[in-house]
Amino acid sequence: MATSLQPDSRLANLLRHISAEDFERQNEEARRSNRPAELFALYPSIDEEDAVEIRPVPECPKEHLGNRILVKVQALKFEIEIEPLFVSLALYDIKERKKISENFHCDLNSEQFKGFLRMHTPCIDSSSQSRSAVFSITYPSPDIYLVLKIEKVLQQGEIGDCAEPYMVLKESEGGKSKDKVEKLKVQAESFCQRLGKYRMPFAWIPINLANFFNISTLERDVAELEVLNGRGSTGDRRTMTMQARRLSERSIGSEDVPAPPTFKTTTLTMNTFFKQEGDRLSDEDLLKFLADYKRSSSLQRRVKSIPGLLKLEILPAPEALPCSLSTELLQVKPFPENRSRPHKEVLEFPVREVYVPHTVYRGLKDYQRISIGIKSSSY
Image (cartoon, rainbow, N blue to C red; front, side, top):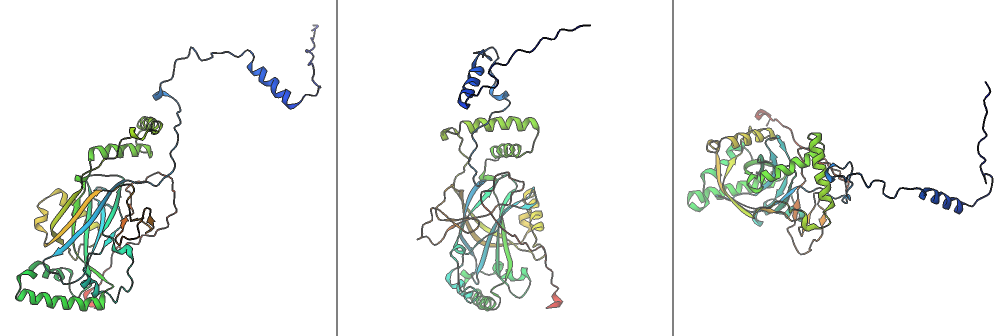
């Protein structure tokens, strides 16, 4: 069967030389020709919440800051004053059974008792003179306790026996009590000269931080943070992502962004301390005791206590706190030179991951003593 083949149309100007500028102009004209003016005019508008992708302006990477509280240790006194005492504060979460901050060490000793340790501390750094700390809490809950521990210079005898004079003697009574206090002070000075580098536990006291936060509001914020960090259902993540996008888009006007929750400045006065038991020194024992302490208020009456006075001031920490040191003991501007007691920021150990960009390099090693056992027969 015969088939007639038609030749292709001739390509005019195929081999004609043309400049790059003319070639681009011709392509532009070809693209604009026969183009519909309103291609999507009949297509319904897309709801912002149903949009497939809306990219807000990303925020500049910055250091993560949780709910920050400023704790000021104002006073620590006992019925007798015979030796230097050393205070440390840390946060514990009894629900997660974890310690969630590093220790903040505070020196409240008078010049007289500091003199007992002069041969062991020839040089004193200004950072060790701090009496106020900034704690950060990313995941607030009613199960977080601020635990204040008190230590003393290592002495001969059992831990419980060394605390006995604080429970039975009063320096204000005079007479035999005053003579015993003076004798104990001489003994303490001798121990400080020989063993001033070593510490032993003495007493402690827990403070529940639930009253310093609006827990219902913060739990909602924590749930939102967990969703954005990848925890939670897909639907929740989609909803929270859209809300975060809308918040980021309107963050140009700072007055539209809600302020973080705050609480009033509170001054706490404690009159009793828990006596440290020699067989309950680990963090596991402490967390177990805190859990029992929260469940039963009668537990406090069954534990031996030491009379004394502790005054703390707890208030919201401003974002820019003058005269403060970072967790690496670096000065944070503004830092006036004429102030001798800086504020110290305490490093947080979040109970769950916080997914934020790392803006600084931090090389830290945290050493914790798990346990040590020494039999009395080995002395």
